[in-house]
Length: 73
Image 1 (cartoon, one colour):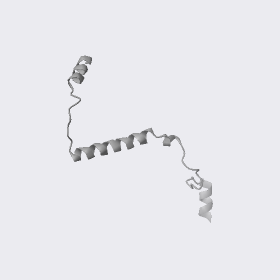
Image 2 (cartoon, helix red, strand yellow):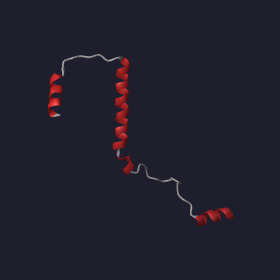
Image 3 (spheres, rainbow, N blue to C red):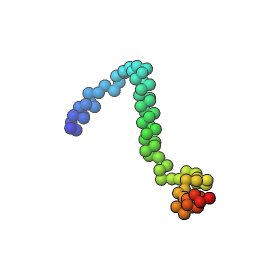
Image 4 (cartoon, rainbow, N blue to C red):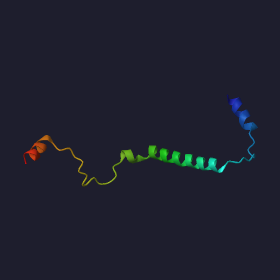
């Protein structure tokens, strides 16, 4: 396997130029951009941190006693 890789890289012509179409260029840029966004979301520390102070969240569970009190009123 190592010998195959050596032969492959030895036979490459690094000075060879090649052309790509505008569509291929745009698709490569879009792929790189979306890959960067996905990698950034996966590697971000956001899932371990709390952003904001949490004041006024109002996402609390109302205990059963208070629910009954509200129903009586």
